[in-house]
Image (cartoon, rainbow, N blue to C red; front, side):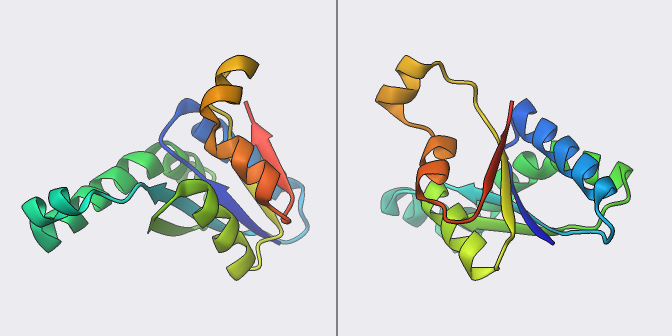
Length: 140
């Protein structure tokens, strides 16, 4: 089984990682876990100001932060994972990566938006659930 675990550094992402560990323990064979964080692209003016290395460092720092909680959970459980720091529109990249990597499921945390704010602002989780043909488990 291949699980795409999408994280953003939130407590709900850490909970999603704990869910994946529980799921992994129930499987006959350890799953392959793709630990995915999608960082928003920077504006062209900001990229020019930071330069190529500064932009790369910015995205690497954001990924390091986003992976921290989930990585701790996975390492403590001695669960192997593949970190995949990506850049783009989060919901689109998560869905595309799940298809490209042939993931069996996507696991991600919910930001816990109430129905009204979710309706107006939308959320990455809501959009992934709506667009994905791969099963999605949302952890609160």
